[in-house]
Image (cartoon, rainbow, N blue to C red; front, side, top):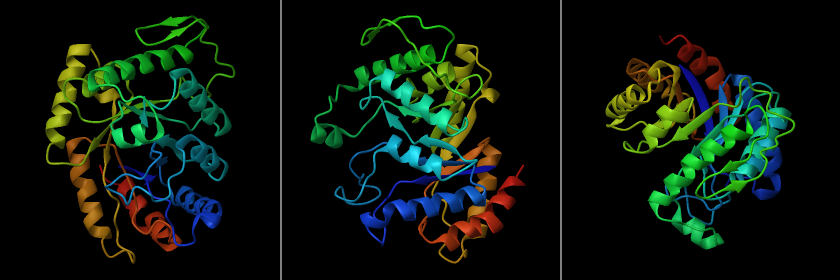
Length: 291
């Protein structure tokens, strides 16, 4: 079982003026501790489940570029990019650039988007849900075209591009992995089966059912279910002094039994280096032995 660190909150004790130095220290420690990936959210306003909307929030891909410069091995991604915020040509170029400059460590995390208040607040279009899923599938097709050989044009309902030139190409072979976030049974999981290398689901009471739905979509698409990396969002809480380590490891064992490969989530007290160091000594080695 692998662990991924998501950093959803940047309202830290030392304030914005120290945020660059503090974030660099956090991600260096996480990278050294052995986290398989480091992720941020793709939001412009803080979301309600994490904190007040006015709390500090950094733009995702600028932040991932910064993180790339302060890490050496962890994969880098958003959980997850909303298709509303960037044209797919810009998105593909951003992921490619991240992949090249990080030495092949980029993952495209993507979803249909949901935050209407944030979109309306900054003036981004927020179309109905059916159109957002059209945009999601067309974004997937577009970025795959950008990562394919050649520079063919691309035309769809929402996009018309004369030449998908992408130089330099991504270093990841055959391309950066694609992770689709969300558990929608009719559309999202069908798109996972059709296009994605990874899924990202919530650790909810429905998790086992969602995996069964994904399996059925794979059968319908002629896709080998076992080729999809199953990731789950789960808060990685070991307590400030490691007192909850056993509880977390027990849950990781349960998730592994369901077929989950990666547990990805926030770490409470992440800005305390001792917490991340405990992951490196007490949690990640033990998680690696599960299964």
